[in-house]
Length: 579
Image 1 (cartoon, one colour):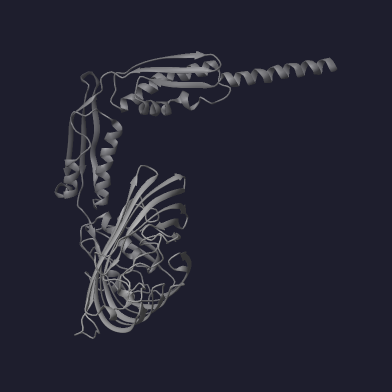
Image 2 (tube, one colour):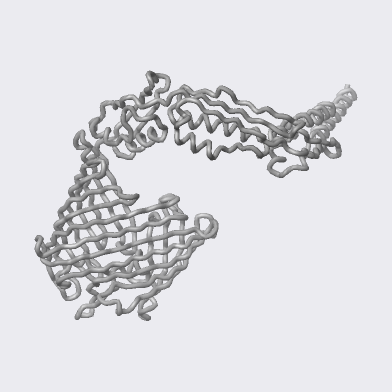
């Protein structure tokens, strides 16, 4: 009995050992040679033997069958690329495992002799179809590629669907191949039918009225259909800020009499929005922000914002009443009021302002026009004054970026003009212009060069009565690092900085993210605030650490002012996006 059991265990062991060896030997290594690497990889994916290369318990007979079928599979796949006379050789060997090798001689490819492309219907006079035909991806003399043919056919169908040719159909689509002649003819006949137009657009009942929503329409009933117009409508409504969910769907199945309706679904955002934020910057110290917004006071979409900003150098309380979508040319009109207290190393001020503004787009720039009545009491240097000014102003700004949180290529440019006159409710007369810019450009995969500059000029009748909030100062995180916030500028009779009529500052920085989201930077800042451009220029140099955090780039800099040997090394910390 014991002997029988032992024999059975011995044979079971041999069986398991045999299966293990056979499983090792059943692995298949497949290679394709004679064609470009990219094509070889594509051909491998299409081979049945490649898909079974890691299978276990493959019999010799089955592996040989897979090997033989590979020749037909390769031959068929090569015709996709226009090779109809390819010669394929191969061998199947076995050592520690199976090796299947295939050598391809593609031969001469089939070339397209003629592309017969015909359009009928309204698409014949469509400028977008005219552009498609001029740059059509298939042309006589090209090597035949069936994938490119399918993509070209789909480009016609996609354009037709996006332009409202909902009844269109491809009446002929084929490729006739003549392998002996190494030539092919492509036939693509498209019957577009009519181009549909938008039906009357209706909106669901919402907290804002239909009159306001119609101002967001880039289209009207009867306009020729376009997917891009539908997308613009959806984006306009979504960007209005009133709705959490915006859906605009084309009801093609309900098209009739040359018109197609749109179905619009809207879900409103909560009426009230409360915000709170905590931040830190070496210019301002700890910052606390609190905000409240009533998103829709009435069905015309009027809004009310209230904000409080608290920090070690500046406190403010403001309110804005905004009337959006004022007209086709003006995006919004608003009224605002603000109370502000500021206490820096060089000045103290307390101001009240009330005013109005408009916002619009002009030639791709954001334009803001404003007028405000400013009452400011201030102490700067040995001046202690009070001023009442009625200040009209206008500004233009533009920002472009490949990524708003961490920009590899982008910039920001702004120009602002403002002034006041003693003949218009103002204690003094002044005019001021300020130009600011920042440009970021990547250098390789990990590095960036960051430059920024600001210049400004003021003409004023009585500088001593000119409010400190309107004077130019330099120094700080976004000015000249290595110096305290607003600590640079012309000095008064008491030797204290009093600010200047002019401003010219700049910066050049090189940054390298050498360890994933961590990196470093070297920089130099230069410039000053001036009453005369013969005044001295201040310089600083520094190094910094960079971290691309989930909330934006965190910048920690150590900078040293070069102009004043007594100036120590300053620490600057800034959290936020580049632009």
